[in-house]
Image (tube, rainbow, N blue to C red; front, side, top):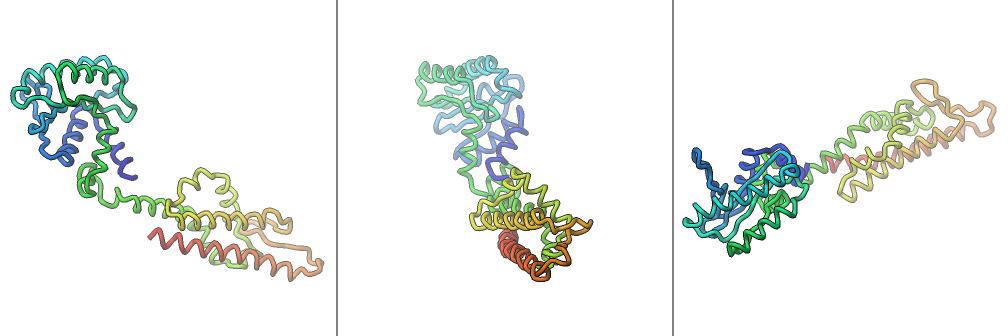
Length: 295
């Protein structure tokens, strides 16, 4: 998975205090001067889950399991948290900005919540106030250094590297064709006379699953073109066997069996071997490029 997908997975796995921790960890990595606030006994955090004291910037986190079912509750929380915030914290560091951090699961936020925050901003003369949703957090994640991203998401450096992900996808593509390449490279041009049945039926099934093929195409143009060529050559091999009535499925292989009394029979057999050999050679040339990229 790429960084965006890794972050989304982390968000979906985080509820309540776990989401609050994710937010605090991100802010500490991305925002100079940010400090989280630990709740104290029955007085809680007094409407402040994190702040940048020197800038008068405050954050309050709300992470219900299903936000769209809790819009009214979220509106109440915005109002009550700001009242608590202003009553206690405004005297410590005057409130200039107030952000309501919402785990919206990337679905967006009700305009009613945004409206309430705009009212709070205007009524209290704030420089800024608004919703800080998952998209806002994602923007911050993408500004971090690679090592900070790995620390935040709990993944290795390679797992967040787009090139790693692309090569992994290409390796899966090659793995799906492993027995095909083994059979064809061993047979060579002789596959024009004895074509492996398991390869024939694999291609027949595979070429009807375009979605599966497209999923494993590389984002690298050269690699992608060679993957497409590998598929094209396999389809041409399949068509040669499928459209020629002289091929007979005898179990393990399709044997090319033109009539014994056919004039030019031997030449026809050699011609079929040559054409199949060309398909396999073109397939092999592309295979080498794709394989080298995947390493």
